[in-house]
Length: 456
Image (tube, rainbow, N blue to C red):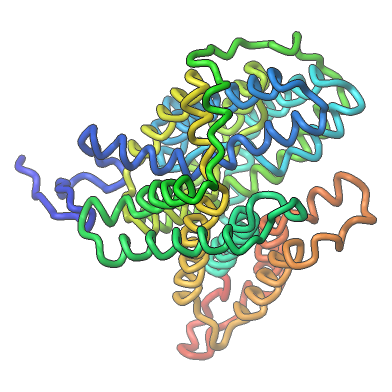
């Protein structure tokens, strides 16, 4: 049977029976779009091993090893999540990266039990995630549109401070942070990215973020702001081997701590799947969530074996999909291949790592803002008149912003509670779900008198 062809906004032609998520683009486009995704997620991927290595007082060689392992396993995890096999993977354009939410728990375990126990806890928590994924996936029914809209909005807002730190130069309080040169570089990068997106056509508009990154980096180099000494020092080729820090050690408390902390990963991955599903216009079912969580668990086990950390669905790339409208999961899989290559060739990874933070911040601000607008757009379809959805949204967004607006609010709480309550995405999810159950159900819509549930 002949298939009907359609012209997509990205300039490519797909068939009437192929959803854009399942569209296979030409090799050149796959590489360009995949590279763009890899560049966006790179900073977040290497940040966790960098922070962990510094806190554990590791040597430079051990730090490079952690970074290489993180890049390689992140690439494999992204391919599993986007392409999928059997019951593993969401088969959505989702990238996987090391979870910041687990960092505090890992540092606590490492300081008390040692690094091998960290990897043992990671493996144990990952196995538990694989086994419990179907149970956790059933929670999706408690995410009505008002909760989803709040969640997407908070995901974007929570990432804005990350862009702000990049714009300032990377580390608040460091010499030169927030300098005029950094601010100007970020501002010019934003202008270039917006200009290419607004006035570019077809393929050029779709790689506006990549153009902004490259143009900003060239400008930084011309102004003497680039630091590429690490590229010369990095080896050309290195293969990450498992158990580089010794065999993993399994103790009850580290595994329990890691498993409890995985609640955040469950919440973030569920929210990100729902957010991506809305952006790419593909329904997200319980099976989709279960597959995504199984992929998280498998990737986390792989991370523990290969000297890396727990993985979850990253939020950074949601805005990139929204701004380019390139929804193919094979593009994200190509980004996974790029990450693996970066992990095998440290010199290439060092080149990407040398991108000036203000350039990353300028592009990041555009993308994270687009993620926030995606949440606002979702909330525009939520009925507020005659319902309590306004109350649900107000409290959920307020709580979601709270840890970002007042970072020291929970400093007097114990470690695990501080870890949980300090996560704005988790607070937003819990608030939205609980309020919808408590005050949303049964509220009628005064506009039509049909007795709809306000949260559904």
